[in-house]
Length: 169
Image (tube, rainbow, N blue to C red; front, side):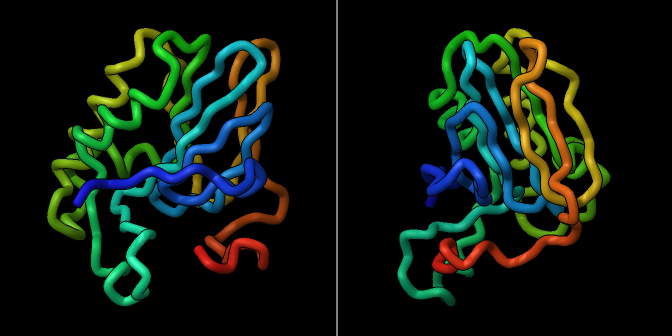
């Protein structure tokens, strides 16, 4: 099985493993996740990445929960193909140390795979901002002064359940 990507249902709540497109994006809360955001002209495209994904297309919730698939170099290559070849700006935002620190506790098989995939994705961009580490919480991105900037969603802290219209995630 492969780490899968899905189209975001809304740019106001881009969930794990989803890719959203718009002038402004808001991600579901981060606890160990990152977002990779590219800018082309006046548009943003952002992916919300979890260290371990699952296949949402499996109908049974128990089986779906047992499809832990670490982010990998293969996933990085497939994600990079979804982004434009030469974006104007690139930002990686989130729990960056969890993705690039080999001293991270080995919570599951494939920790090295996550680190390698992150490094490959980062190296695939010719120019980008320095990755931004933020504490757990909910964040969004927008364009300001021609660059991608991030902002914290007021009142957002620990990971919460999605809005009611996204209850079937």
